[in-house]
Image 1: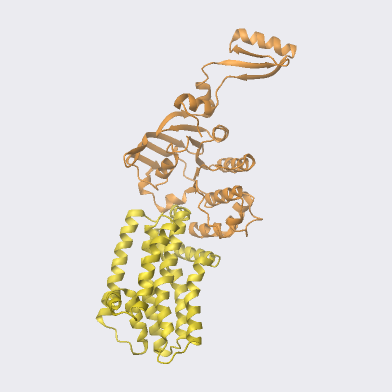
Image 2 (image 1 turned 180 degrees about the vertical axis):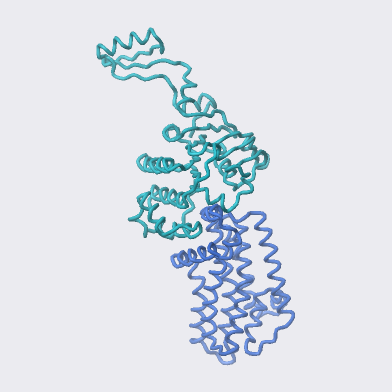
Length: 230
Length: 285
């Protein structure tokens, strides 16, 4: 626990000085606030921009930041120093992951406030976001572990992130894309967010999200075995 | 502190990467409290060997022991006895000197007082709030050294600690290394700098293409390879002369000394660089 807290603390200090990562956490909540308050087209679904950007946020911020942080630590040898100081890979991942999860949950609160969710809906929204952020974190950890350096992490992250962040949006405009997108956790999260106030959890939602998480966990295990953390 | 005669023992260590054999049966012992130097040119296998000794790499063959324990089975307690300064320093660039050390102090359970102590020790206390990205190469080296000694380790592994540093900064690091030795810390040092090895090390091993080609005390190795055994004399009139190191020459030298005609006098004893060249046919760097 001491090591996890030490890494979490280090990550907090580091991220506040790392604009590239910091912007990932701030960008979408800020855009959502602006769009939700500035644009009001007749016939537009309620909380359209909150749903849209919250889904993108889930597919982008935790995934890219987790991958970037791990890849940077690998490239700069800091992760090896940590491991040689007897920090276990699981402790490192939990310290870094819990930090990103907490920061992303702050972003989720901003979305919830912007969407004016109240009472039970507020907490349901946060719970859905929490699950989505966790799934993205796992995928980000897999990409970061697999990558040897930041360049490699970026080139893997961009297509992966585009699939998970943009498929839900694109599926609004194209039925074929929607048929494919429903097998991604981000689309299921998007569907759940859009019905927060009258949530009916279907088996399809749970199965797809669980399947995505299991695949990410297996791929992470493979990446870890192949490349290791340090 | 637990004091063993041998703190590190390597028995027939072999390491291959694919078809390339990097280490070819290394046998070595590092004594408690000494500075041991592993010398070799880049690519000789020094970093690979340090990775095996510190348990970062499982050797393809042979057995490596740290404090009598196989390095593939090192525990948390064993890692607490090690301090490491890697060739690539592995510092957090955006964090300050203090924050870099604070992270490891928390991990190792060291106090804030200890952070202050080591930062003062390496002369970085005044710069403690400066981010690593704003430090000079020498200061980064000192910070990495501070981190390595933070947990008061029983053994320090220093991988090319003065590589790329100017002589004055390297001298500062040498002083820090000697201070640690004074405290009883065993030091495993890799370097391709022969002067560093001759100055600091109690024992050195010369590594060439994955094999140890020479081992011993630096002075003893140089004496062993002093095949010419001659004296080189430069006289005050600029003339140079070489004499055999023997009784007949002694009389001649005495005469020259009495006349005050000798400006400099040296033996033909080689330095480590020359020994390495003799043994391998190539330079250390």
